[in-house]
Length: 266
Ligand SMILES: Nc1ncnc2c1ncn2[C@@H]1O[C@H](COP(=O)(O)OP(=O)(O)O)[C@@H](O)[C@H]1O
Ligand SMILES: [Mg+2]
Image (cartoon, rainbow, N blue to C red; front, side, top):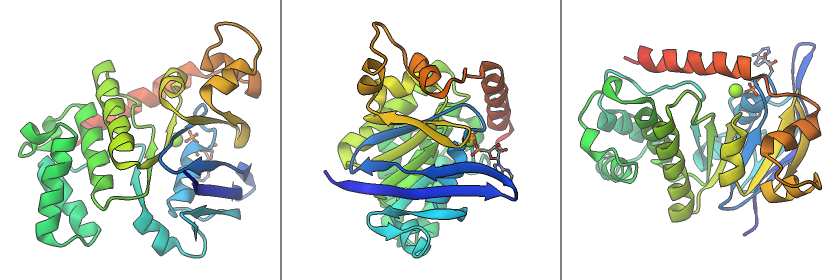
């Protein structure tokens, strides 16, 4: 196995506001790691730092031994990223969106076409390859975006709230394809979610972020048994370690924004 990603005292402040404090986590190659926490916990900030889109105020992280601070260009070649807000172009077809990413990653045209078709097949989107993305369901758009982020065969894939705002079938198919990626390509995946139940079932390791601080990290089983009680849910573990309740009202608002974004695509 071996460690593929390690953060070393990552911190981030915006002016006087510190939103991430001294984060230390590490990911094993080929694992699925979930960063959990309510809105505002610092999940997106962490992902933006690890994908080199934001500079840390202190600390560093190594991805496959490469520093995000010193070698951001090299890091970008090692990673794939799907942002929180849906971002595929609704006026283009799925195939065209993929070819665009082929260009972005400097993949030669013929090879990009081959990989685009292969990715569509992998994500069960072949039948929709020549349809405009604005006709896709939210789950299909997400699968297409994951396909885009994988075209250059990255070592580590960052998915920010990949299932937020999707209907239950969308959630299920997106998860199935994330797990298939992990199994078939041994891709290391770091994702964020505020849905504790998903993370519990599917992650190798989880970390709880609460107001910018790492409250606990471990395997879902290990964390649940650490409470020393029967029938413990991930939500119970979260509340135990953070003394915080999950703000479902706020999560719901976030979900509606995401759905509005889906219907606005195109
Ligand atoms: N560019 C920015 N300037 C100022 N504050 C920001 C900025 N980006 C994020 N924040 C703040 O950082 C905190 C963490 O945000 P974020 O990382 O998006 O949380 P999460 O993804 O867990 O919901 C929030 O309080 C948010 O308002
Ligand atoms: Mg976020």
